[in-house]
Length: 637
Image (cartoon, rainbow, N blue to C red):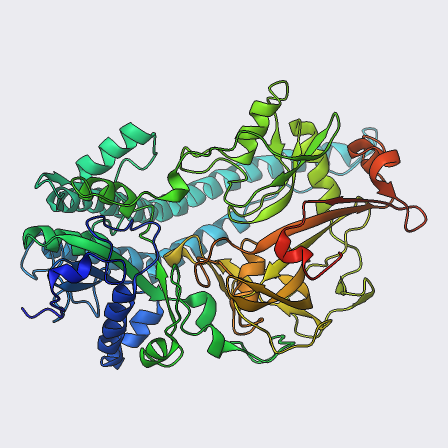
C-alpha cells in the first residue's frame, strides 16, 4: 500500500526551526512547529482532493500527522466511508473488517437481533396487544350505586333481594373481567418478554464481541513491549483510581495510537505528533432569523488553529466549503491510558497542565463567617479535576482548615483569572444558589448595556430572562483581549445571542447549536486597543447574562458572534502566553422578599464595608479583582 509521506534529511530535525531535537512533543499539550504546519497543509490538500469525504469530515472526523526522523505519516480516526484502507493513510492497529472474519460474522448476528427488536417493537401484534389490554381495562364492571330506602317501607324487602342479585352479578362480571384482563396482560407480557430477552442477548453478544475486539487490539510501546487494551485500561484504573476499567467504544482507533503503532512496526523514530479536526463551534451556520448584531468576520478565524502561532486560513478553505480546522490535543477518555503506555520509552515533553501547582495561597478579596472571595490567578483550576493538580478549592481548604465544607459557588475556566466566590458551608452554598437563580417574572426581557429593561428581539434564542427578582441578581464583568483589531469604534456596544451545547466529539469544546443548544446571551463593549505580544489588540468589556460553559470564548470566536477569538484561547483560537480573559468584578443586587436567613447581602457581606443602596429597597455589593496591566493601560474601570 502507498502512504503519503515526506522524506527529509535527519539533521533538519535537530534545530528549533525544523523540529524538537530528540524530545517528542506531548500529544495532550503542544504548539505545532512550522514543519508540522507544512505537513498539515499537505494533508489538507489530500482532504480537498476527496470531496466525497466532506460530509463525514464535517461530522467531526479527526486527522493526525506524525513526523518521524525519516518521514511523515497521516491517519484518520476510525473508518472513512466504511473503509480503513484508504490509500495514503496508515492502516488500523487491528484489522477486524474482513467480511468473513470473526468480528463481521458476530456483528451480523447483533444486527439481526436489532432488526428483530425493531420489528417486534413496531409490529401490529404488539400494537393490538396493547389496544386489547386498554379496552379490557376500560370495560371494568361497576356495581350500581345503592339506594337509600326506608326499612319500614313496602318496597324495602324487594330492594334487598334486587341488591343481592346486583352484587352477585357484579362478582360474576368482575371474575370474567379479571380473567380477560389477565389474558390480555399475559399476551402483551409474552411479546415484551421476548423483546427483553432479545435485548439481553444483544448485550451479551455485544459485550463478548467488544471483549474479543479489545483483547486483539495489542498496542506496542517504544520499548518494544506489547499489551492489549483490556490490560492497559484495567492497570490504568488501578493506578489512577479511574472508573473507566473497560475501554470505551472506539478505543485504539484514534489517530495518535494508529500513527505510533505503525511507526513502531516500521521502526521509525517519532519526533512530533499533531491532530486536527473540523471546528464545529466555528462552521455552524445561522438559521434564518438568528440574531446577528454584527457583520461576520469569519475570514479572521476560518483557518484558526489550536496550539499554534500562525494561521493558515487558505489551506483550511481548500479543505472544503464551510470547513475550518483546528489543532487539537489527543482525547482524554480513550487515548490517555493508551498513550500513557505507548509513549513509554520515548522522551516526551511534560504537560504543563499536569505539573504540580506551586502556588500555596490565594489573594483574599473579602471574607466573613459565611463566604470567601478570592482573586484566582490564570492557570489554576477552580475545583479539582481529573489530574492531581491542586485547585483553588484545594488551596483554600488548606488556608482555612477550620472550614472543611468549603465549596465554590461558581467556577472560572482554568486559564481565566479573577473574582471567585467560595461558600464556607453547604447551607450557605445553597442559599447563595437560591439567591442567584430565581427566574424573573418579566418574561421576555433583558437588561441591556445601559442597564435599562427592554423586550427581547423577536425570534431570539434567549427563552429565559436575565433579570432575577425576589432573591437577587448576579452581574459579572469580564475583560478580554482579542487576537486582532475589530473594525469598530471605541464605545461600540452590542449583544451576542448564540445557543450553545457540548461538542461531544471534541470535548471539552462547546459548539453553536441552533436546534438543541441552551440559550446564551452576552453584552459587549469595545474599550479600545492595546498592544500585547507585539501586536495591537481590541480590548472588550463582556457581561455574560447567562452562564454557559465557554460562553464568552465561543461568542467571541464564532463567525456569527464577533468572529475573532480571545487571545491565547487554545480551544477556539491560537496559543499565546496566557488566555487574556479576566473576571474583573462581580456585583450582587438583591430585592425583597429576602431569603429565609434574613437580608441576603447582610447575610453574605458586611454592609458597612462593601454595600451600597442604588435603588430604594435594594442593596448592591461590588467585589473587584486585581487589574492586569493589559487592562490598566487603557481603562480606569
